[in-house]
Image (cartoon, rainbow, N blue to C red):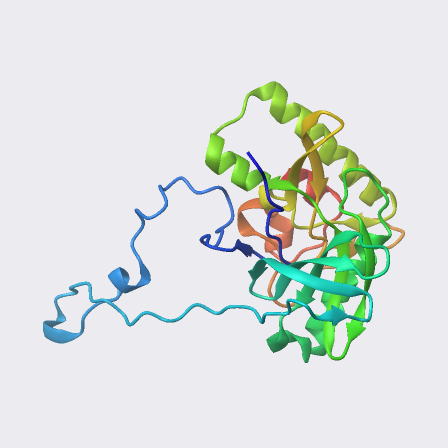
Length: 264
């Protein structure tokens, strides 16, 4: 079976034609859960009778096909999109190498804080040279478009694997977990805490005959810690996926690299 690159994004990413992920792998058969319209209550007679809501046309990312970004990367096709960013397959115009380009969605590109965090992901991840961490090769802004470039992976994330295959045998899980541990150890060694380890951010591909080769993705909310190895408490809403977050992150308390171990 030919496997296309899994669609990725800064936050929860929606593959083209797929439903949005909700954190942990779903236990409900797709299509059996009630729709938003079914949950709406009719006002007439106050009987709480489900009433349909008008359907909204889903948002679609802009078509950048054929556009040359920053004079270097020709956009070929859409791979997937999420709430904040869209991923395209592209080709370097000179060396003809295929890459994945993540572009911050236009509605957020003018927000300096979001744009900074987006580029911070690229800067942070580009410092991590490890076989089990996604390789970021370029980043920047061109004509108002904020983007970064990463290696093009063919395979699927672990959340997809779990949804399609159910619980995996222990030896297979251990082998993949060891790779994730190696990646996290490399990040922690230079003071980087991922803060959003979950199956959707662990990508499975085939390499050197190993069909369970893992790459850790999405350092969008990673934190670089100080020399004391403990971060200060965060302000505002906590960032991450609640089902995998350590209690200290949820409560906004001081934390360290062990929050990644908890998530794993």
